[in-house]
Amino acid sequence: MTESEKYHILLVDDDDFLVDMYSLKFSQAGHEVRAVKSAEEAIDTLEEGGYSPDAVVLDLVMPKMDGFELLRHIQERELAKGAALIVLSNQGEKEDLEKAKELGAVGHIVKANAIPSEVLTIVEGIIARQ
Image (cartoon, rainbow, N blue to C red):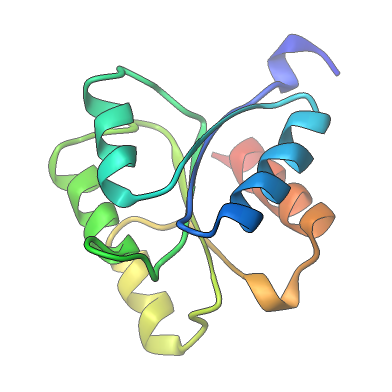
C-alpha cells in the first residue's frame, strides 16, 4: 500500500467492542484511525484538534447527541471539509437514510448486514470516489 492509499478515518461510535473491532480492521489495512465514543468528542477532535480526515464513519444512535445532530454540526461549522460522511448504523429505515443524506452523508452501511471486511471495502470505495 502506498502512502497515497492510506486514509485518515474518524470513527464515531459509543460501542466499545465495535470501535475496537473497526479500528483494528482499518489499521490492519494501513489506514490511520482516530476513534471517539461520542458526537461531542468527534466535534472536539475536528474543531480543537484540527483533524482533517478523509472520512467520518459514524453511528446514528448515541447518547446525548445523536449522529444526525453530529452531521448537522459538521455541515453548519464546516468541519471535515472534503471528508466522506458515512453512516455505519443499524438504523436502516428509508426515512433515516434520507435524513442522513440531507445532512451530507454520502454512504450508509447497516452494521448487521456487513462484516468488518465489507465495511472496510465499502468505506475505501466511497473515499476513493470522493
